[in-house]
Structure formats: structure tokens, C-alpha cells
Image 1: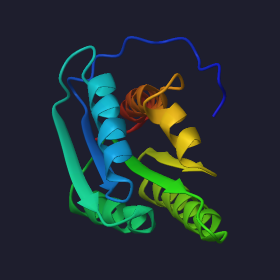
Image 2 (image 1 turned 120 degrees about the vertical axis):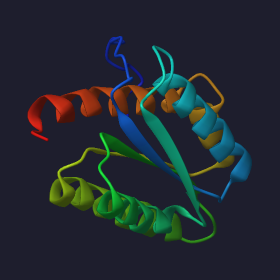
Image 3 (image 1 turned 180 degrees about the vertical axis):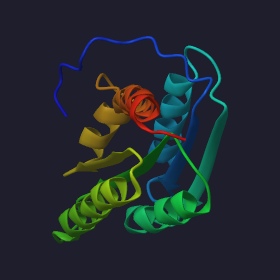
Length: 157
């Protein structure tokens, strides 16, 4: 993501059903990210429904998103994770695999899925994006609302 997000649009979420799947790894950072996403979604009102499911790690996010999308209709889904580099390149594999699966689900299910998996080389970079000056949580919320609005515009129910 760029360090220069688009202008903020005020979107009333009252007609939207939004699902969030959040990984549990890097728990403190995930909790902060989840709080920022939820606050951003509710900034201009309460959505019809905001459902949060937890999964062990970022690799499990697409499975949970798929289960939820197969169970009921959603205006938009958000997958949240924090993947920080360890001693190997495993973090790239997890992030790429999960990101590709989320994109595939969005296209096959016809529902926007926001990839909110933050991938960094170190803890300080993750903190900067979640609790620091780069507020990715608000960006993910804004993207979800804009895509839910677009989904509502172009989907016949």
C-alpha cells in the first residue's frame, strides 16, 4: 500500500453485512488492527451486521472466508493477519498463498474480499503499520466500505 491513501469518503454502512476473519498470531498487533478496522467501519454508523471469526494463523484465513461466504451473503469480507519474517522465507510463502486464495475467492464468489494481511521483515515495521503513523486498519475499513458499496450497486438480489 502507498503512504498516500485516497481521500476519505463518508459511507453509511447501515445496509452492509461485513465479515472479518482475523488470525491469532502476533496477538497484540492483531487486536490493535482489528480494533482499528472495526472503528473505521463504524465511523459513520453501525453496519447491519459485523461478524468476526478467529483462526490460528494467516494461512487459515481463506478457508474461514470461504466457509462464511458459502453459509450466507456478505457485502464484503476482510482477512486480517500479521506475518513477520523469521529465520526463513516462510513469511513470503504464507502471505503469497493467502493473498492469492483471497483474490480467487473474491472473484469466484462475487464478493469483495479485502486482503488485510500485513507482511513485514521486522516487528518495528509491523508496529508502524498498525499502531504507528501508517494506519492500515483504517485503510482496510475504508476499502471494505467502498467495495461493499460497489457490490451493492452492481449486485441484484
